[in-house]
Image 1 (cartoon, rainbow, N blue to C red):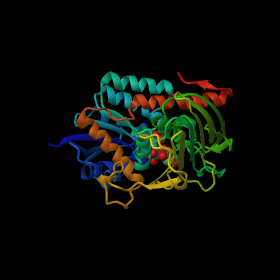
Image 2 (image 1 turned 45 degrees about the vertical axis):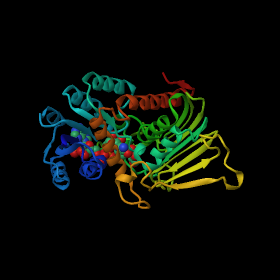
Image 3 (image 1 turned 180 degrees about the vertical axis):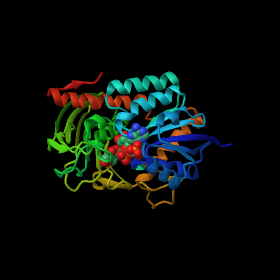
Image 4 (image 1 turned 90 degrees about the vertical axis):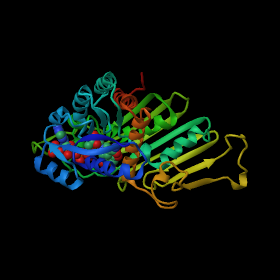
Length: 385
Ligand SMILES: NC(=O)C1=CN([C@@H]2O[C@H](COP(=O)(O)OP(=O)(O)OC[C@H]3O[C@@H](n4cnc5c(N)ncnc54)[C@H](OP(=O)(O)O)[C@@H]3O)[C@@H](O)[C@H]2O)C=CC1
Ligand SMILES: O=C1CO[C@H](CO)[C@@H](O)[C@@H]1O
C-alpha cells in the first residue's frame, strides 16, 4: 500500500526545478512505500509560479508561504528559497506539524540554525537538509570505502570548490537572480554557498572538525545593487581558504572561490590514509579514484608492481544507487543526486530510521561555516564547540 505525502514546495528557481524533477521521478525508480503528491507550489510572483505549476504538474499554487503552511492538505514543506528565508519558513512549518526539507546552507548563521533545529526536534517532524552531493554515487562509495576501513588511519583531507561567474566588475549584487552576492540575503559568500557542501562531505567522510584558521577576500569591493541601482559595498566573501583540524587527528585544507577562471562547478576532495586514498572531482562524477596500499582485512600490502591509482567507474549494480537506474556502464547525472536524496528520505519514513543529513547535522556544518568567517575576521584559529 503506498502512503501519499502531499508536498508543498516553496520556490520555482534552480532548486525548485531539481526538486520537482525528483518528486516526479522518485517513485518510478525506487521501491518505496511513501509516494510524493505534487500538491502545491509557492512563490511571490504569481505569473511565474502559475507557469511553473503548469509545467511541472503541481496541482495548485500559493503566493504566500504562510498560507501554504496553514493548509490542511499539505504534509511536507520543501524550502528552496534564498537563505534569509529558511529560518522563518522552517520554524513555522515545524510548528504546524509538517515534515520539513530545507535547502543548504541551513541558515544565515548558527543562532538561526540552533533555533530551527530546536523547533524541528520539539515538533518531532521528519526532516532533511539537501546536501545532495552525498548522493553522488561516487561520493557515497567513498564513504563505503572509509567505513570498510580501506583508507585506514586518516592523515589529510583536501577540498576545493571553485567557480568563476563573478569575475566581471559589472555583475550587480542583490535582487532576484543575484542574491548570492548580497550578504543580507545570502548570509555569506562562498563559505555558506559552496564550502558548506565541502564541509558537509568532509564531516560525513572524515568526522567532526574541531578548529579552523581561515582567510577570506572580497576582490571587487563595490557593485551596483540590482534593486536600488546604487553602488554599495560588497559584504560577502568572494574567496575563502581555511586550514582545519579533525577530531580523528587528521588535517584539512579547504579552498573556495568564484574567481577561478574556467572552473564552473569544480568540487573535489582527496582523503589520504595509512591504508589508501580516495579522490573525487564533480566534473568527472562517475569516477572515484582509489589508491589501495594495503588490504583492510588481511593487512597485506598490495604488491608494488601492481599498485597504483584505480579509476573506479561507478556504474555497476553493486555501486550505491546504481541498481535503481540503468544498466552497468550507463552514467547518471547531477539531477539524479536529488532523486537519490529524496529516495533516502522516503525510505527513512518507511523504516522509521531518520535520514541524514538532518537539521542537527546541518547545524554542525553551520558551526564550521561561522567559525571560518570568525577566524578570517579575527585572523586567528577558532575552536568549534
Ligand atoms: N543543494 C544544492 O546543490 C543547491 C542549493 N541551493 C540552495 O537553494 C536555495 C535556493 O537557491 P536557487 O534555487 O538557486 O534560488 P533561485 O533564485 O533560483 O530561486 C529562488 C526562489 O525562491 C522564491 N522566493 C524568494 N523569496 C520568497 C519568499 N519570501 N516567499 C516565497 N518564495 C520566495 C523565488 O520566487 P519569487 O521571487 O517569485 O518569490 C524563486 O522562485 C538557496 O538556499 C541555495 O543556497 C541552490 C543551488 C544548488
Ligand atoms: O551546488 C551548488 C552549485 O552552485 C551554486 C551556486 O552557483 C550553489 O548555490 C549550489 O549549492
